Length: 147
Image (cartoon, rainbow, N blue to C red; front, side, top):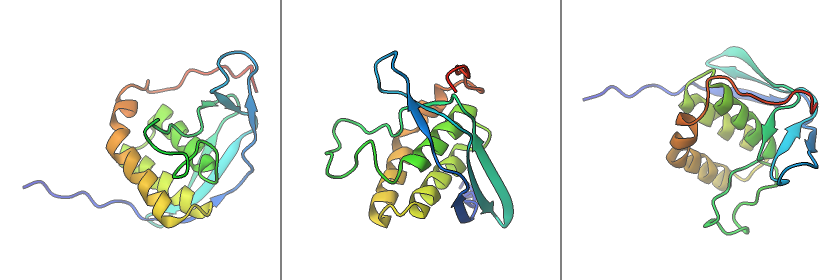
C-alpha cells in the first residue's frame, strides 16, 4: 500500500498587489497579459512564501470547459487573480502540481469566491489539470515587450 503524502498547509494568503491586465489587440483576444508585477504572499507549512507573476506573462484567465454552464462559473469573476497565479505556477512548474492546485484554492477563498464554488473549481483542476501540467515547458516563453 502506498503512503499518502501530506498536503502542505497554506495560511494567511494575501494578494500583495493589484492584478493589472492588458488585452493585446493582436491575436484572437482570448489572451490577457500581466501588465505589472503581481504578487501574492502566504505561509506554507508555517514558512513565508511569495509568488511574483512578471509583466508580460500571458494568461487565458480561467480555462472553463464549454460543458460548464455560465451560471456556475464564468471566465471573469473573483477567481481570476487565483487563476493567473495558478497559470504562472503551471507554466514554471517551480513546485509540485498538488501544491499549485492548493494555492489556487487558497487564492480563491482569499478573494471571496464562495467555498462551494472554490472547492468545485479546485476539484476540476485536480481532475483535469494533469494534461495541461504535462504539456508545459519547464520555463514559459513569453513576450516581455508587451509589458
